[in-house]
Amino acid sequence: MANQLGSFVFLDLETTDLIGLKTPKITEISLIACSRKHLLDTKRGELPRVLHKQTFCLNPQRMIHPKASESTGLYNDLLENESKFDENTAQLIVHFLRRLQSPTCLVAHNGNRFDFIILKKELEALNAQLPDDTYCVDSLPLFQALEQAREQKEKDAQENADNELADLELSALTAMEELEGSPSTLSQMQKLNETTPQRSKITENYKRALRSYLDVTPSQDKPHRTPRQRTSPPRSKRQLFPDEETSKDGPSADTPPISNGQPTIKKRFRLCDIHERLLGEPPKISHYAECDVKALLKCAIAEGSEFVRYAEERGVMFRNFSGRP
Image 1 (tube, rainbow, N blue to C red):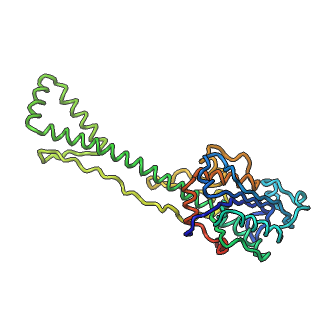
Image 2: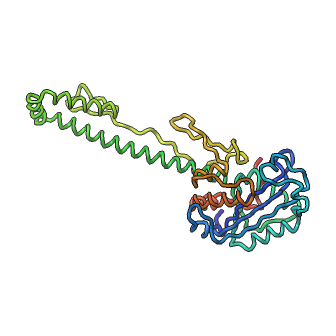
Image 3: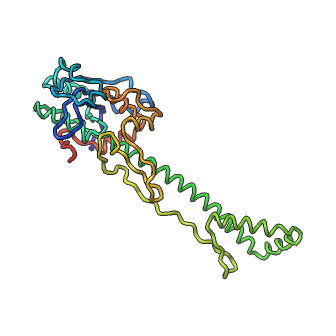
């Protein structure tokens, strides 16, 4: 998108089931919004003082899967007297978005494969539309991309530090060998060796240790030894924002980092895992829509300007969102 976002609207749905043969029905929807400025100005681990909230529990008019009820605490008997997702619900969401600083951007974890699909189908069934300046972005690939970029930056910094140290030691060894090769130095070394027999052994042991570390082999047919140049391994450039992964906040959200051509321990990108990595602890409550939204908002604040930059570069108009195949 070309415009700077005015507000972020963090969204989470609880539903009757996961997406399968038919689209699940919403049992709870929560939206918490804050302005772009307040998101960037808030300290890590805190929430903005100025927040706009909207949470509904809804009668899905369909049986809730037992596993969904177990995780969300929402059962059919608890919701039997609640309103369904109807025209009033849709208009309340529309009016909520219209009163925010625009353009607005919906943010949902794995929204491309879950939340955005379900919400859009509910709205289409009622012939309702969100405001035209409403964008959406999936936070799952967002956090994956930022994590990969951070790891690559740390790897490059470590590699540069190692190369600088190796270059310094190589320069020291080269200078020592050139110094030893000069006639005046050879004469002085000969005198020292005559008075201190162990001097030559100490020097040779030191040179051997340095050559072993630097992988340097002295030339046998030249008066001045020329060490092999130490070269750094080629660095692979990673795309800052790679293609989105597929999953619903579960094991398939893992991304296997690569180290020296070998896969290392996988990192999981469920919301609770991201929250723990960024903030040092998992969320206290999960699978309550409002609690999950607050956890997502805290993760966004922890990433700060990088989160905003990704959203502004990769956000798409909600009216154009068609879901993932």
